[in-house]
Length: 153
Image (cartoon, rainbow, N blue to C red):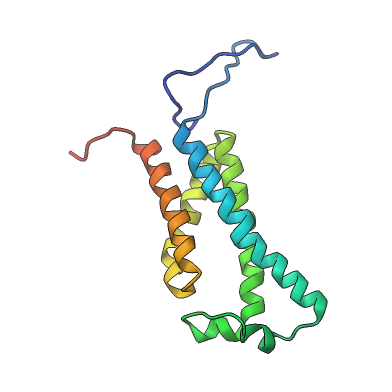
């Protein structure tokens, strides 16, 4: 099953008979861009920061004093949180690439990532605000594509 695309699909000549190339909806491209920005710069940047801190031999207690989170547990376990950020970033980038390739698994993974981020963003304040803005916007765009113009009743 393909993700819904715009009505003005373009046909190209491929090596396979009957193969068509469709133009991806602008909302899917925009959602993918938001997810890639979030995955590469926000999540991936934190993981790269962990690698730098680990290479420099900075202790977890020293690193935790320079970052502020609403939940003290994250402050105390900053390195573990930075590693988890790398995992979230890899999943977010994978989902965004799947959406760009018009794959339903990428769409589903991206929706799951956005929903999980929206739930967890309150615990990550103040950084969670940017997470919420990017994930919330991407989630709205993804749902707009999925439901199109369907009415509630």
